[in-house]
Image (cartoon, rainbow, N blue to C red; front, top):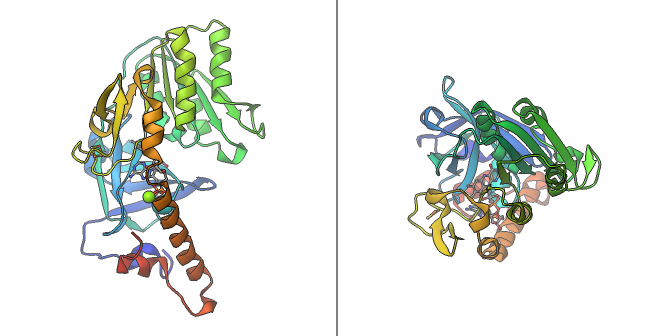
Length: 314
Ligand code: FAD
Ligand code: FES
Ligand code: MG
């Protein structure tokens, strides 16, 4: 933990969750192993935690990638998207997180369906991994399709291979494996006449929607893990409201997994972009402070950490 780092100024009297290991898996994508024994004992595939880095910080949901009940740890994989995930990804082994609440959400429905296809797009691969692993253990023939924008951003390849009867890989630019999208691989499977009893898709909304449209035509049962904005994670605030089969549901308690063919993706997209201006402003302020910290020669050394302490980073 470097001097002036985010957590060096946190109130150490508060209960905190220690990061026992932190490592970048790809540019902007970091895996954290965090001491959280109670959550590690209870976690099931498909569940998530809501965490808050510092007192005035916002709460963000992150899927539990794996847990180790004996060591009392959980792992999460975080992609830097805006201010809070960038702040999180600046934490290192030995640092701590103020709150980690969970496990939250309904677990994935695990049973022997027959042949399942698990599709992971980008960081969605880390979110799909525990479900793929559990479906394989339940006796399914598991085919995994993993997609990333380019070679550098392919994550958990060996982990996914380890829980799959077959792993199909794509990159958008063709810099690794086959050029194309995960939906190209899914289409090939369908066109080859592969019997598919269930598709699970986790990743960007546009990808989940494309998978859903493809499987709807084929009448293949499909589950997607939705990522609306969440705040409390307990069904109280209404932030994560999604439209399922024309009815409002709360993804934090009724999901996050839903029947893809019943999801209104346009409402999800619209609600997820509601705060874009504020998010962009917040990220720009964060970046400006970070730049000043990285280049203090202008005499205005204002560390990210002191910003945290003063609560100016909301
Ligand atoms: P911002 O700039 O604030 O927001 C960027 C975009 O992220 C927004 O436009 C919005 O679409 C989304 N977002 C912002 N705030 C929230 C919020 N409070 N809750 C949900 N989405 C938000 N990301 C990972 O990298 N790894 C995971 O394992 C993972 N699991 C998730 C599990 C669930 C159930 C959900 C709902 C989301 C998950 N996410 C995961 C997404 C992650 O929560 C967002 O990327 C993060 O909150 C963005 O915060 P930010 O401040 O960095 O970005
Ligand atoms: Fe508040 Fe779901 S996050 S109701
Ligand atoms: Mg944010």
